[in-house]
Image (tube, rainbow, N blue to C red; front, side, top):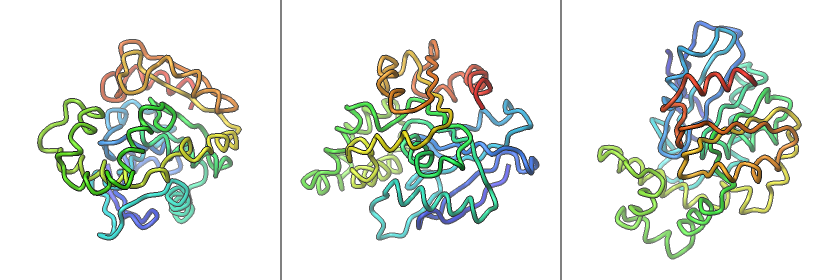
Length: 260
């Protein structure tokens, strides 16, 4: 494993290269969900065939990724352009995008803006489609709440909804991340901006994976998500919750290798 830092849209981004010895292998770029970090997909490291190379990114306000003190927001399109610029600088062409929850917002935008650079788009319990999720971010981003959520007390119920069993030692970092994600709304939501139709700009393969016990993203909502893509295969994972990469990595890898 090798950890390095690179600028993406002004964020000093933590990146873990899980297979630094696999030079020339097809890159699988892993984008975690809210509350995660570059280590979210670590259990896939030993399961991924040598044809592939796994990178994990810590998204803004997660892991060891840092922003300038004055930076309060992120915007999907600007962030994706920054990510594409970094890949270009590193000489990396096409990538497989392995996205979970909030990270799916970024992956979907990347595929729509850079379809020729996207090999496969994998969305695991994707964020940005299910109405309750964006409704929550809309509340957090509203003017009155912007002042209130500067205090952790007012953020607690929202964090409890997203991560019911959040460890005490992770609360401060999680509150900070949610505060900034809320302030970034609607710049983090194609749905809120009425721009989901842009997703059809990506003509390649999309894979939608949802656990049938996922509390945050209902498996029954899968057909509504799939209709936004040209070529989308849906996989419902039995007995899986919101984090199949942690709960059942072997089963998840079997699904991934059907499509990568």
